[in-house]
Structure formats: structure tokens, C-alpha cells
Length: 317
Image (tube, rainbow, N blue to C red; front, side, top):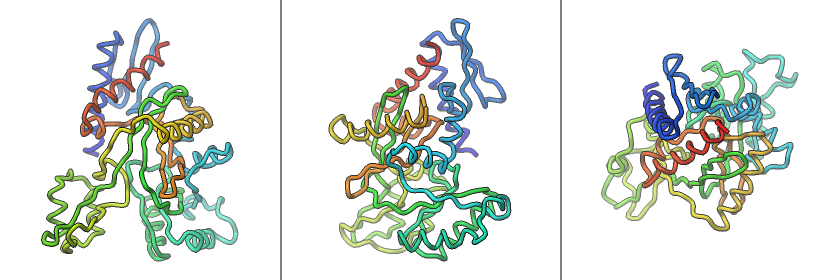
């Protein structure tokens, strides 16, 4: 909860700064849950980091990973495969007579590795990479115990780079790639000592990632050890802005196609590039968050401020 408060403080600061520059009156309502913006007789709202730009149905679809998958797949937009698994305690009527386990096992035998995740999670929380049936069962039961009505399972893709894109009204404003956190062994230091030198923030998602590693191990000289298989900036990944070029154009084309298929006006759309150089949409986010990017990338604050400025301009056209 504390991390969320920090994010909102940053977000409110940048929005208030923009509103002052743009002549927009801003008022915090509902204990800070929403901002009410007024200009030239028009009133618009922002809840958390969700802007008034998007239709309600589009936002709700984006907040549901499986719904996003079905919408994009139906319109031939390349997207990471998803399979829906329902909680038998709360969604009995959606479970077929043969149950769900055969589907789960079949997916595992097909792909050998599965990613199990909450259907509406974010920031890499409640996302598990499972490499055997036991791990799959534990991950699923953990989420169901947390009262999740549904979860999704996906094949594990061998990802070269994950990209976050900022999409507004049919245009891509910014793309940055993410590099997983890693260390390089020196043949002397333990993994714990090498990780400490990274000065990663003390966050639960990072502690959870580290709990999966043997921190007493001593990596060989020059050995690369990934701290996490995830690409979340909140988990210690680093960001680098993608320059315009052939790859940028390929990602841009895919993102515009996805945004239009979802009827989104303002969103972040995440794309993976596999080691085979294929591109797939990973997810669409109706909330546009960029706190860590703005705080850690040189010039990032002004880049994100420009994104939000254009979003506010579109609200008051």
C-alpha cells in the first residue's frame, strides 16, 4: 500500500504542474482518489492514473487480461496466448463437466513452461513461472486462496526484450525497452554481495524474486545471473528509450493496430520481442503509470510530462 501512495504523490505533482501551465483548475476529491479538472466550462476526471479519455467498456476490457486477449485475437492482432482458469469455489457455472485440470495439464505438456497470473494484476505481482505440474498447482491454489475468481495461464515465451509504449489517439508517443536486473560474477563475491551492489529498492516484489535464488552461491568470473525473469521496473529492471528505426516502426504498427482494435484512446501497451524477433502484445493498460521511468531515466520526467500534456490537451479539445 505504501508503494501506491508514493506513486500517487508523484502523479499528482506532475498533473498539478501541468494544470498550472495549461490554465486548468485542479481539485482533489474523494480523499485523493480522483482529480477533478476544469477549463472553459468543461469538467474532466482522473481516477488514480486512469484518464477520462477512454470509453468505460474499453477500460474494463484492458483491465482483464483474458478479455484483452480475446478481443485482440478476434481481430488478428498478434498477442501472447492466454487460457482462462476459473475458481471452482466462486465460478462453478463456468467450469465444464470434465473440470479444468485436463486443460491445465494439456497446456503444460504443449509448452513445457507456463506462466500463471492473476487476470487483473499489475506490476508483476502474483505472476509465477512454473516448470512442472507441482509448481502450477501451487501457483493456482495460491491465487484461488486470495479469492481470485479467475486466473490466466500463458506459455512461457523466450523474450529478448519487453517494450512499454505510450499510445494516444492512434499515435505512439514514446517507446522504451526494459532489461531484466542481473549481476556479473567475479568468481569471489557471493550472489548476495553482488545484488547488494545494485542498490535495489526494498520492495516486496524484489524480496520475492531474491527468495528464489541461492544468495550464498558464488558466480564464476564473467557469469551473468538474472535476478528475475520478469521485466518490471518495480522489480529492478532498467529502461532505455528506443530510438526511431525499423524496430520502432514494427512496434509502432503493432501498437496502433492493438489500440484501434481495443477502441482505446490513451493507454500503455506492452509488447514482447522474442529471441526469434517476433513481436506480440503482452497486455494493454488503461491506467498510464510511469513513475519509475520518470525518476530513473535521464530526461524521463520531461518525456512523461509531455505524454501527460498531450493527454490533457485531448481531454479539453
